[in-house]
Image (cartoon, rainbow, N blue to C red; front, side, top):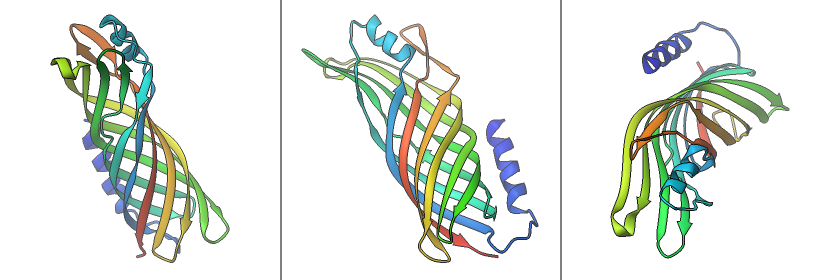
Length: 208
């Protein structure tokens, strides 16, 4: 349902007849680092296995971007993303980990504030629908529990961009994925952790 609503709203936005000199379709690609910010019950689950998961390990995030800019102050954007498998790690006699793998789509509103002719600040507020996989155990001993599920999240963030010309710009952004989902590991319901992503993107704009 979430995916259908996102697609409908996005298509309506692309069909808008809003008139402004600086508007139009844009596409792009991003590359960055994802990290478990708030492990919550995931750290408690490590404790159930006698593991002190106190160290976090980031992973690579990639994303494709499709958006529509209405004017200098407002855009609507959809992304396809792969946040990799950030993890909580314990390195004692053996290496144990709790990893959270995430792939999906997001749909966001982007309010923007121009800074002169070539720079701007922007915010992000939206929803994400993803396939999430939670894995806990000691891989070297083949002691692994895993569960996969569809998960929904609120996505928010801030960033800054700079225009390199009429059609190309670069962005730097921080995003947080805040899930309200539970996955089951070894008959224990575990809330999905919050993820932080820092990424850089290149954007190509197409004026009407």
